[in-house]
Amino acid sequence: MLTTAPRGTSDILPSVTANWQQIESLIRDICLRYNYKEIRTPIFEHTELFLRGIGNTTDIVSKEMYTFEDRGGRSITLRPENTASVVRAYLENKLYADNYLNKLFYIGPMFRYDRPQAGRFRQFHQFGIEAIGSENPLIDAEVIALAVNLLQELGLTDLNVLINSVGCPKCRPVYKEKLQAFFQENLGELCKDCQSRYEQNPLRILDCKIDKCKQLSVGVPTLKECLCEECTTQFGKLQNYLAALGIKYKLDNNLVRGLDYYTKTAFEIQYLPLGAQSAVCGGGRYDGLISECGGNPTPAIGFAMGIERILLALQKQNLIKELASTVDVYIVATGEEANQEAIKLAVKLRKYALSCEIDFANRSMKAQMKAANKLQAKHVIIIAEQELQEQTYSYKNMLTSEQVSIKNQDLNMLLSKLGVDKEC
Ligand code: ATP
Ligand code: MG
Image: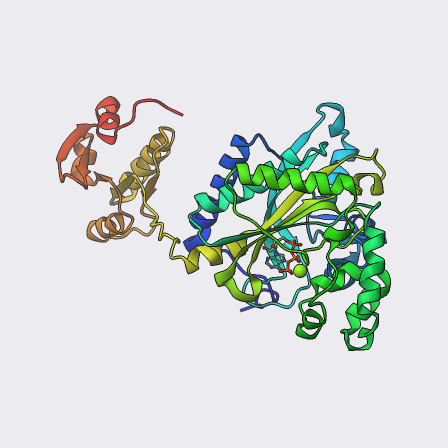
């Protein structure tokens, strides 16, 4: 063997791709129902985009990015998340010119130099949405409803929806000062990262996963007390809408998105049985990001969901179905001339949307029948010496065991046995 896959990456094998496709097709279906359109951005971008779009003081930027110089000497980064890229694409392609509101979704791989463990990988996949152009908390409610709707339709129960408001550039500075005053006494006991967060971005201390920092955060002043009137009103409206939608939520004062361009609504959806990696979805408002990236001030909100974590959650709830690979028609053929007839017929039948398989190993008729059974073929067509001589096919329905001989000329008869009539 040449080598193994890099640490933190994995192959998605044919035995599970059907499960991925099921989730992806439900995502597409739900996005259609909520009128979100798909956007596909490059997997790598100029590093600068993420420095600005995510921010220097976040873990993602300070420790987790895959950054390299390309052969032209440019600094390139494999996307660690997709919001910054979507905002770049939105501005570069002037999507704002067509609609007052752009509702976009994406599905794809992201790359972070995280510490690999259950539910945490270096290449992982996210489904996310971004609604760009409205400050109305009604859209915040719709965004959360879409996420909950998807997870519920997948069959997940025991979801924990946490919400918070992180304020805006008017009210957050007041809170930052209060936080600094709160932590000042125990500054030396915070972890190294939190000590630098204390100076640069004290809100992120609340996001620290280290036990000691969590303990020291008990009893922190809440942002709620510092919210300005506008933020308070918006947060109140969001809660009313969620209640009207019957979405159960909990208020979590420590749920933060620590950068200045994250504003107002922040939310997370957890599936608690997953333990340490229980967050399946994280999102919030980023009203300041578009101007930070050079556009006109434009309000926006979005979320990202980890698809691997959704699969793990489905496993925990025994919701992963074994999806057997099946074919409609297996063509059994023996001998060179029959093989040629078989491939011709298979290619023809595939034009009628039938899934067909033939033998590529010159196996015996018995072995080919066994293969047809293993693939759970609904129909078998046999082409052997006698069939060639009589210019017929021997047709067998594997469910009813009905067997008939059909003239090669009589395609309609064959098609009617196979239950199709129109070419694709
Ligand atoms: P965490 O606190 O678990 O590191 P995060 O705050 O870094 O999460 P976000 O950037 O909000 O995560 O990403 C949204 C979602 O993407 C997460 O809720 C999670 O489901 C998924 N996710 C993030 N990082 C990884 C990873 N390394 N491996 C697998 N899934 C991930
Ligand atoms: Mg992380």
